[in-house]
Image (cartoon, rainbow, N blue to C red; front, side, top):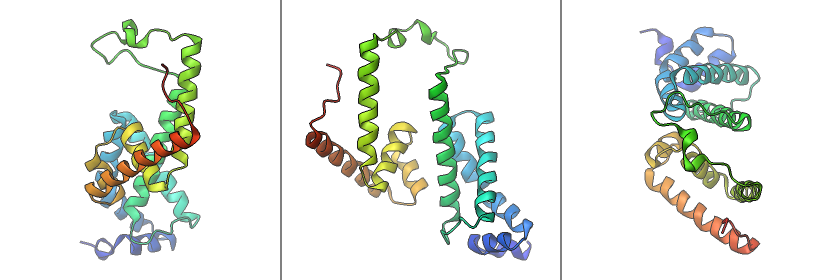
Length: 197
């Protein structure tokens, strides 16, 4: 085992910033399993996970070179947050494109009542509701925003959320509970109606 392998993440980061490429290779080897597993868990497609994994480390390298890493001792959490943001960007772009593949499913989703055309009025109401919910989420404290996004938009379990955010499951559950309480208060305060009927 080389002496670099005995260094902690922060020491390896500092050595990479100082120009030592091997330190970065060790960091990638050390954390690639966890980072790739997380990405694959969320996107559920091997090829897409590989692309986002590569993008993540390209962004990591650029950020380190620009001196944007300030989270001493939390390297893997920082990398996971970068991958998390790239995943959200990917899903956002897909949503804008409106692309849905019918090939990998056993049933024909396009022949389902669930996917029947909404009226223009339904679409406007849905868009308005989603927009209002997103605005409300932005008003929550950051840790509560994060748990809602990971649970409802990325479909992660509380165990996975706890692991990705370096907190206990009880803390993750508590954040969700407070987030929902705060959302209800905001809905009442703003007198919003978030249903179609």
